[in-house]
Length: 399
Image (cartoon, rainbow, N blue to C red; front, side, top):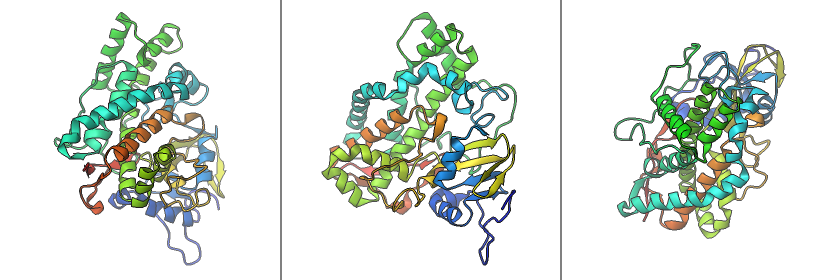
């Protein structure tokens, strides 16, 4: 079968499948992913104007294939030229990523773990007297923004919105976010924040991420706009996805009592538990690519210029790769999930996010033996865009 729409789940007696995310998808995305994987794993979505891939092998193959570009897609800030590593192809990708890679290495994150633990303990000390907290807004969102602010050497900003004044900034309609393809991005409040922070670093040398970026600018390895755009993406990416990883992972544990009890009995499983929580319900659902030439995937021809959605969460539940994928198995071995993507664009901050998730969740479980949901599971609401999905609020009782 070749070409768009050919054989889209329309075999003998088979009802054609559709993929147009809506409120039903937000509540239970795996139901639609299972249907697509079974009936049309290389699916052309007329509603989205994208190919949708749900098998692990197809997703990983595209993410590693140089015939697909990461360029000119959100969060591209300056259309026509990549100034951010996430939307740059090799060799530009390596040039943009290299100045800060050492800050996110295994050794660097290992040295950061004690500080992560200190922040976790301090946050819990502050909210513990209340007995019941919103684990998303009171805890999960506070941890990563504190850590990334310290790593970058910038003041700790208050959240832009609170759960009482509105929804998170990324709470948007369930569709691939689009933006006007103008040559220059509008100047945002965050741009101005980092322009001030960079000027302060020029006046007084510091040992942090912003100083690394300025050193690369001084050495003519990065331009001024590349420095600014890299700072913006590092700061944003270091918060939203990790907060949702912690929230989603904690909810998964609290709704799987056997796994929760096992982690309480065997705290040494914290590392493998964190990886399994990332596989089970990662907040980042899709990564987009565009074909630079005609490519055949699973018997379908993706034409030059076609856009492809690599569904990471669907790949993480592919039964061809993960035994009993709907089971939360905190002892799972060979857990080669793609929660952080694959290939050269594998998430730079993946090790940091994993460490924050591991320490946050394991500390809550260890510190509060009676930790439990404060509302019935069916009352938990989800929020997000087509790209990122997370728990809106997570009321938990500490004792």
